[in-house]
Length: 111
Length: 113
Image (cartoon, rainbow over all chains, first blue to last red; front, side, top):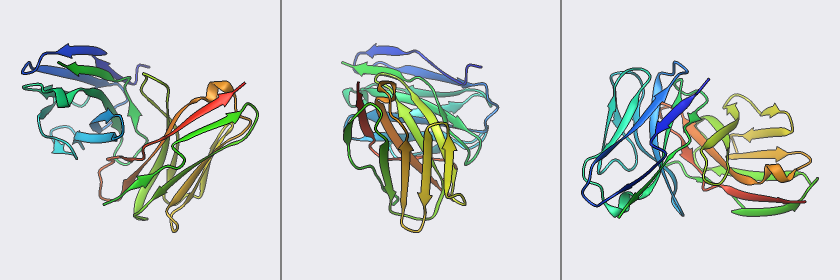
């Protein structure tokens, strides 16, 4: 049982480049989330999808877009990467208000 | 706005001692509270979920209590082992948050042999 799978695990981008972080869950959860984790700032919510077909902004959405491709998959796109987006990105899923499960993270460096 | 605080930020204990980790939150209108463990360079592993109607939840050597009225939760780890060394995070959801988690900054625990 894979749980929440994120790809890639590591990425280095140049300023201005774009990329998409992929996330898939196999627990039939309705809700999916993208967080970023920064030293001294903790984990902060970027975007979430309460159910298939809906997406909403979280605490730090600027510079990001998301797509809920289907019930299993929720992607995060950086259109024009900036050094401030250097971070560790985590995808999570849950049933609404249920136990949340996290992926292993994507470590992104923007130079 | 809900704020979650974990004190202390770091803790070192000798093997065999019981661990007590604290989490406080400012808005008592929570839906649930979840404790996670994070190893260096890894993702978050869910340890325990406590619903707002519950007072405590237990799993093996772990016991978490919840006092909504005072805005506090405590995670107890009995008979600590070096393998318990990690960062422990607590997070809460509120009734209107659609499962969005508000995290504390975590407590970094080192258990020395």
